[in-house]
Length: 256
Length: 256
Image 1 (cartoon, rainbow over the protein chains, first blue to last red):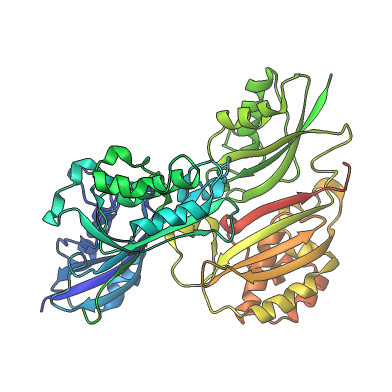
Image 2: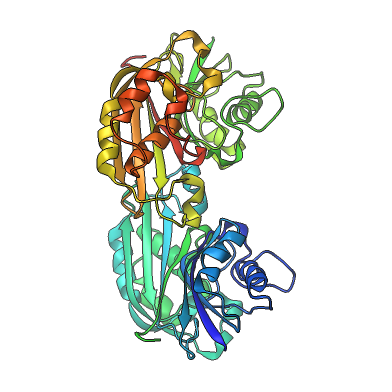
């Protein structure tokens, strides 16, 4: 009998060329997982992720699913799979999914967190998990700018150009929540959290770069509506470094 | 004119065979710093650290000093040195030290922190900075056991045997403070902090291993006085992994 298995997983993206399997044989999270799953299942496995993360981006709660005919207990796909995986990828949970579940198409929202450091000297033991954007940072204008991003907009202006039209969904997305909080354990460290129904390629990093420029006084809060209206990537800020970005959570409707 | 320069520095110990320069040419923090300082000073430099850290141990506030005749501004030894160092070692501050200052002999206390995780699945993005000691952990007996370690004791029982008599100070040390707090951002994560006038080789890791066993119900609080009295390493707990240990701070008397 065919089963759909749904995995909740976390990974450190430092050593990987992103989530997605690549033709050239670069090390990716998807390919690493698929190779181990094939060993466990005894057949080739295609793992479908809820989204792609770029090289160096981390995940705390990625969701992925695959189909198999084997009757292994679920523990084979959690503890068993963890025993085969390198320690920078961990399965947090494996469960049976309903026949209509799809990690990507069933998702109703995603939460990304961007951690950045505004001090001059990046702490060595945090350097792989923080974007370093030095300079005095005022959170008040940054929060005002985030508020202007809430709701439904054409986010074309915050998207990495080459991938704009993938998937055919267009470029309008809805941002449900956007916060910026000081890190409790690192003065000068900030966490920016965005919850939306989807994000265009690199848009969290480009929005972060733009918001931080506003917090650093290099750009006005009022520039946000103008950037959105112009739909021109060149008007937005720099792309923040990949290593500060975490896919925190993928949300699904009840009962999927 | 001869100057003593005092450095405050942080490092990620993951890639290093510890602080201390080694004859075999392994990569160490001290050797890495000395090589860059020699470039800046134009002469060989011997860097004296406040203490040694073992392979894989991190530092947030190591102190070290060296002697030089060059008249460079202090920024040469902070920003200038950082420009030559790999990103896993950072100079936080450089200052002139008084002629009698010695990073090791002038120190009056050190603070070490040990971060450990008691959950089953080690978070991938924290794995290099946490000791993984899975199992239900009750902080109340752990704190009671820490209280029994306070004060002056012969800490022989918590020392790595081969190095017991180094430095000729004997094995009596004074523990001024010992706390164990839940990590605010990681359920199942705990930070154990020890402040003392000195620590024998590996003793923070052995004390941590012992205290965690008490918190996990594998050992009684009352075993602590017995271990101290017996002065026998074999009665204490396992040595906690190096990667959870951080040298947080080295303290000096006023005016040194």
